[in-house]
Amino acid sequence: MPISLSFLNSLSGYEPTLAKALSLTPEAFAYDTFQSLSDEHHLSIAVGYPVKQYDGVTISMVIFQPKKDLSFYSKQLLHPDELPFFVPRKEQTTISIDGKLLVPAICYESLQPEHAREAAALGADVYVASVAKSANGVIRANAHYPAMAKAHGMFVLMANCVGKADNFIGAGQSAVWNQEGKLLLQANATQEALLILDTATGDVNMLDGAFLSP
Image (cartoon, rainbow, N blue to C red):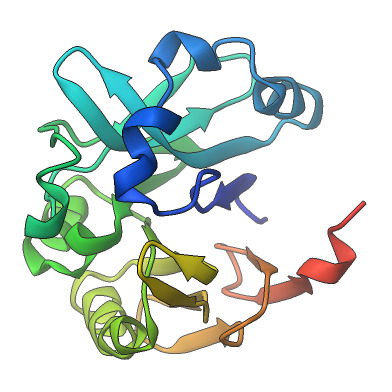
């Protein structure tokens, strides 16, 4: 059966120069609409957002799970360009759903082999990368992620943004690779879409963003 997880790219977009002004404290998410949706539909939801910590702003995923306390994953390996705006964290959060272990990664760190190795060492069934990549970045991602999937025997999911982000254009092409490194499905460069992976069968389906709008 599919893992019941909805994985959303950053709600604020990738905007380092605006992150401090846009950031929210962890407590601000406690009674969020996403938690209500999670509880109602028995759906885990991971949402990207800059989070205000005691020592600075982190690039974070806010993780909502049905009837569970809120949790966070914050980027550990920052790109040098991000250091003026963000602070790193040292802890790797994992997400357990229906007997499967998901390990999240955020952009630059997901392209560092050591991060995928650590995810595999934790027993990851699915490695989930939230990224903000231009066309050149997606070219690198399309080579790196299948290699990591095959090397570590885990599904790899990439969720990329589309449209303007910081000083570049997000090139989309969100995708899923199986444990052998085979590309199962990929959106196009401008498409907002929902990719649905059945971890038991390896089947992937896609809903175009147009069908998701109210």
